[in-house]
Image (cartoon, one colour):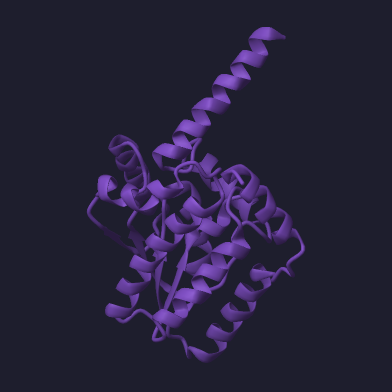
Length: 235
């Protein structure tokens, strides 16, 4: 069975699985925190991959938490793209007036991609991506536990291209590994989150990349562009 066939079988199985409304879960948890915190905002470490994806989650979360962003994205290729996304994230934090901290880890794409290489032929949104999410979330979650954070979450559920059910399953699994830090379940794309995201991107003129980040996703995007161009030229 090819990687594509395995992916299609996986999608078929996922359709039959019950789904949790993680947007409602986030609202319930937020209300619980506000009632029980007695005015104290818990500390949350937020994994963020770019300003576009972080824009609405930052707005949503800073009403509840004392937020610190963790930027550990060695998957992003090339280095110029990594730097551009980081620069835009810093600009958004400054211009939006968000009072949040930012932690940036060392960039090591070469060693990072060795871990993903066994799944290089997978379609985007399958095992290679699941491993990529897990590696970055695991590193950030470990930092959260080692530095006394109360909660951890990621902005990645904002993306239409990412399965929020899978993202939260990864978060649940990691929460058992780091029991002193609670995972904040989310589906930031729901409840008007993507509409608000679009408004913030327009307001701050944020750079919106057209591929997820790694070299494999860049190559897939280029192939799609070339295919679209060929179809247009032949029409």
